[in-house]
Figure 1 (cartoon, rainbow, N blue to C red):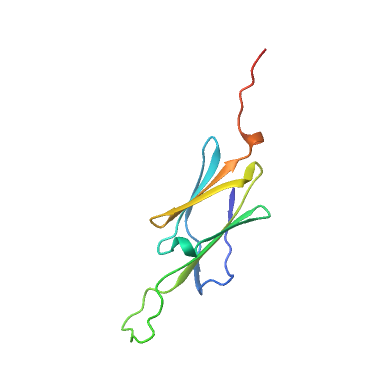
Figure 2 (cartoon, rainbow, N blue to C red):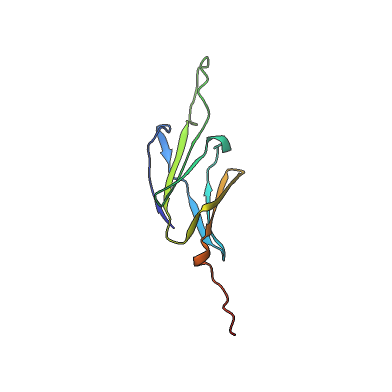
Length: 120
């Protein structure tokens, strides 16, 4: 699995590429990304043509009837794409979002899993 920095596509002006950890277990590749301020409902995951696209909007909305004395927190967005290699079971992908961390588990296809061969 390889990362591609991608921006654009209906997100706020300030789009950032979230940091990610990618690791392999015996049965899957796991992607873990920090996305502070994002809400689960705003996160989009799309798997298309060997790319896993991750995007989300985040931040506080502007209060219409307020006069800001200082405004440092702005609406931001997250966008990142990952190139998937061979051996991913594209029909078996799981995602969870807890405490600002998105975790995506991409299971290996059966032919890529190690198997024991019995000797007769």
